[in-house]
Image (tube, rainbow, N blue to C red; front, side):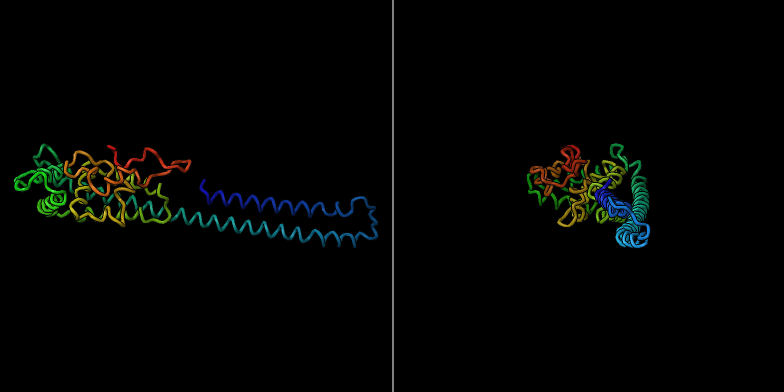
Length: 285
């Protein structure tokens, strides 16, 4: 039960108890007023008027409280129904987008079947192709101790020349839109967003995650992790990245390097409200 539901329950019980107390006071007021007295039935009408005049406000107030409580609960129920309707609408769109993503992914996998590089297919082939070109003749004139910025520029040129020419724009735009759709939903908690994105990430092979990292590294996918979006760090969209080019291991790259050293990155909270200790930034961490 969330905090809002608890708030409704507490307020409801307070109003019910208050209304009950007023009803009890109204019921016992005649006994209180006539206690120890001998009732003269010739004055019964006057006593009745007096008792009625005293008890009526309590009864009326109790009735108002009960009516308010009924309207309040109905109002909250309508809001909860609307919230559930919005959640169902969100989930329907999310899973429809997930279906479209899988179709886009399968198209790329089918495109690169039987490629002949160590029997690698699909995204695994694309990774092999990128790494071979990075270490191949195209880069032989570059010294191994070059600055990281020089290596990144070489990688960007290779990615542009040998990979981006195949046009993966549609695949990445849809994947980015899907993550953004979840992250920017104001009705979801951080933990709920992570749960939905786990479902999405589970549909990505390890090769897809590595290739997504390469896409960011090349600069073409810079919006995945920047000052505005923390899709790789806060939301773990590249949680399983290993067996990548040694020059660009995540532990060497900013902003991951500093976050890993300090351990100062966003984590999920457990049921007690404390940050999870096992919520690592990367799986191999």
